[in-house]
Image 1: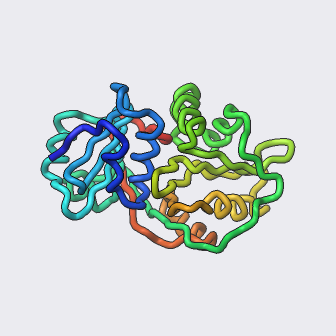
Image 2: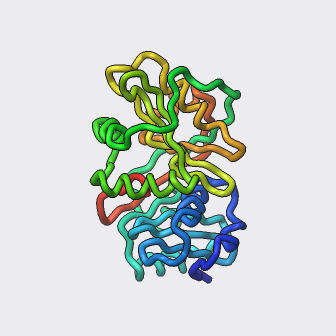
Image 3: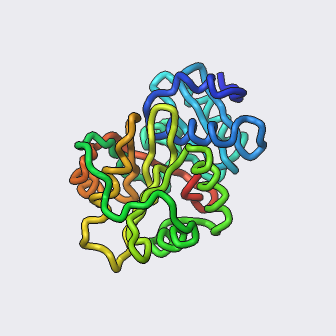
Length: 244
């Protein structure tokens, strides 16, 4: 039975999973007293976060998908993101989907010219110019800065006189980390910047995952030390808010 979460201990059952990284990172950031951030669990088999109607869903094979579907249809949503398999069990046709990769590569050294802090406006512009669905700057800033400030996300970049490449641990959950917002300035491509930066950002004491933005990126991530884990998918009634 679905119930609203009232404290972080209720999420302790969640495994090291990319969707669980999103759910627990958001719970650790916003807590359980805001109307815009809500969290639900179902009998130790499923969990959901809802941030401004953008829902992340984890569910194992024993979850009650009929109840989850009824809840989503009743409550409404902007987007729902989960594994492709779970969304199909719910009867939804994904608007977009691609691969999930798990890092199991070797330890690497810190890249030259690495920085873990940079001007958010320049980061936003680099991501927006690369085609990421960003939303407006203030929404981006309030969302990512809240997680970074509370240790539930982290930025990494390579910069000399300008930002050349960047990557985020977008969601640092209790047992797993989800990487994202990975991009290199087009003028700096061919230098191996992402090849140095991404494995370094993936090195934590938790399992680190990344969502490919499209299927063609699978080979790129495999060369960086990632292996295929599964497929993510999303359905949306409103434009995707990338960082939620």
